[in-house]
Image (cartoon, rainbow, N blue to C red; front, side):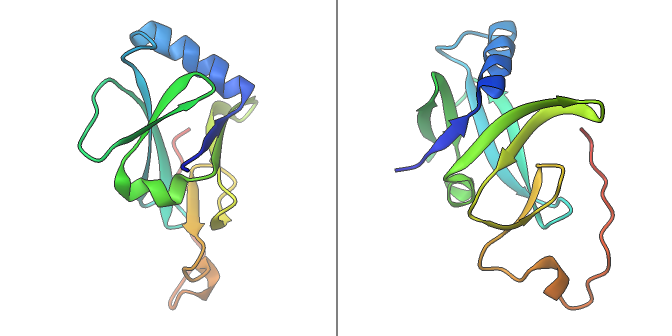
Length: 131
């Protein structure tokens, strides 16, 4: 069964954002994976009130989480935290199924693919994060 875990900090911040932007009944946390990021893929989080064909909806600590079929395999077993620090604040996703992650908590390389350093012609990557 597909599983996502939300920390207490993430849950509190999400509930606050959902109240500002809609109601818990019709507002979902959409989690997705997109190409790009400093490690090959990046995580995305957004509030959404629409479902699309193939979306899977699960309850995570009382919040409805929606995942599209393409992102499902990369996000299964993930946990979401909300971190506040002098460097900034934001949601961080961690997943034990990924090969490597970037310290920003938003970028990763899936297991089963070449490690970033093993890629031919790989040069040190620049971090262009927008936290």
